[in-house]
Image (cartoon, rainbow, N blue to C red):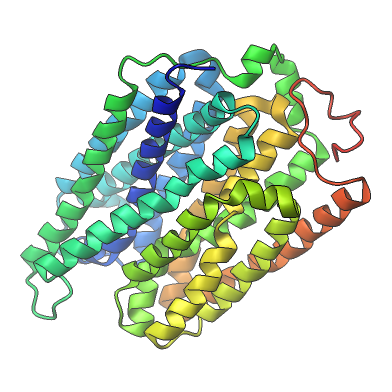
Length: 429
């Protein structure tokens, strides 16, 4: 259909790798960064929040502008954002003592702004690649969305392993490592993001991008906006708050938490769970067709809840790997299935609804991160995991109810683009 389809898809995958490398590397350097800027865990959570607020705003605005501003321009802008944010963090001045007036310290303000810029860049990537993927592969959305988002854990693995190797080479996990070496270590790790950002900017240079699926099909903007107020979509929107908090909240804190709970390198747990997700997401399409998305999401919620509870009680590396395995399998299909079902059940909503779902996920994480930081400070590392486990418990009832609903009306099916879902028997709207 498109001569450069493979190149655009590869560029999308690399852009997503860049986005997730930010997560794994940032998670790995949290303690070192906090030490340099003399921040509490709660203050670190506050500094991380704008990354997700920026992600939220950017994916929503970027997804809405895809049809007018152009996908290539937005992806170039995201690459520039990554570069600018990393450079700002590297050169931010550190305070001379503990930060009491957080918003009065220049270094913390720069750090705050840089995290916001990182989030804006990440949101632009997500806002473009999701509608681009559904446009490039209109007859294979769920599978391709899973393959694309397999590179989210792929980026976590790349960033996590790179951070771990640097830690070992520089001896950053040694008890007698100097403060200067620790600072240089996190700066080198963070700089790796620049490489990935430049690569995907090169891949899209001079490439023609297609119009989105909705525009090509002639679906009006009014019809697109109407999709956002359908009861089924509103329920899906509510579920996205909890799936994102369950998956991404713990993932951002897991390296620090596991290190403190077991004494082992927490980044290895992050890499391990990311590896599970990377492999399983390549089989997401066939699994969805065999068991239905709602059935898969119900089982995923059960496993995610059990994994979180297990992680909250680990005391040894062996226990950590067992609990992380259950959690990793449980969260594997949350994000791609939430997007895939959105594109299949509400195709007339186009990039706009995909942007809403993605933005909701990031907004959820913006709320949960400082909450987890507060639980960490007040109740200990284990409580941070345990409190989040209530979300998958609620999701079991939501996804289980939807699975029973679709089963009662003949089974889940994708809605055709341009079809009036309100009058469709299987629409659930």
